Amino acid sequence: MHPVLFHAGPITLRSYGVLVMCGFLVALWCVMGAARRAQAARPEGAPPGITPEQVFDASLVGLVAGIIGTRVLYVALNWSFYSHNPVAAFQIWNGGLSFIGAPIFGFGYCAYYCRRHGLSFLDVADMASAGFAVAYAIGRIGCFLNGCCYGAVCNLPWAVRFHADGHATALTPPSHPTQIYSALASLAAFAALDAGLKRPHKRGVLFVGYLLFYAVYRFLVEGLRKGATAEVFRWQLTDAQVFSLVITPILLGVLIALIRRSDAAPGSDATGPGSPPDRS
Image (tube, rainbow, N blue to C red; front, top):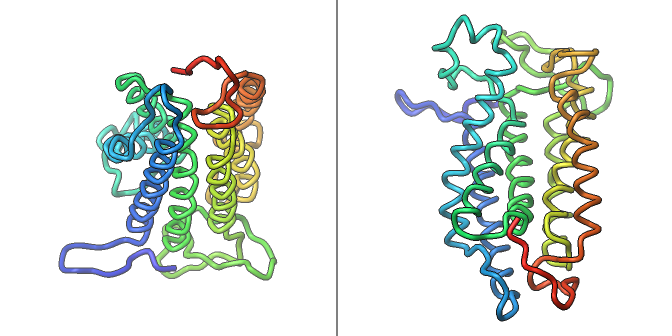
């Protein structure tokens, strides 16, 4: 593992932070490109869509909102500790992030931004989902380099030995490289979402489809992490698995409802005559 890329005097450049920032920049480039394509394909008289410049502006605040979300959710899930150590809740450099908080806060800010600027949230969220998926994939490679979020012991040919938590030299037995599983799954999701953006699609289907994919994927990969870097929360399940079980049927219902709607994204061949503009 390579948690630290290099030291420059008092400055320590950590691989996880670098990969997260790289993921953000790649995602920004992808979403700005999608916005540019959507602008070019938008028919005359269609409601205004988000511009690449607006994507850039919104993404900067969205990044901060997502990071705050990961910390807030982690503190909430570990409130028994932080209620007695409130100052530690702000010490983010000591670790402790729950990724599920990123889409909650990030897309929450996206909804606020769209309402403020008169944009369709579902159109913008469809674009953002592809960027989110690729950013997550790159960030998980950062987890691999950092040696965190690994899985349980296994005897597979690609098993990896990580530095055991809290030990500078001790190594784990050969274990599932769940960070790599996550990265590969998210790259596949990005490819599907990017292709979907270039084809006729109903508003919001890509966004909700990605959330549904993430919930199912996370439930599965948490099963491999349980007992290693993910603790049992309730009913022999981790907190992420419980969240996935609760949200999956809700997302499935929303996805079915969106598919049955008659309107589609602007510029899509699926948009029928007289389809009303969507400001959801």
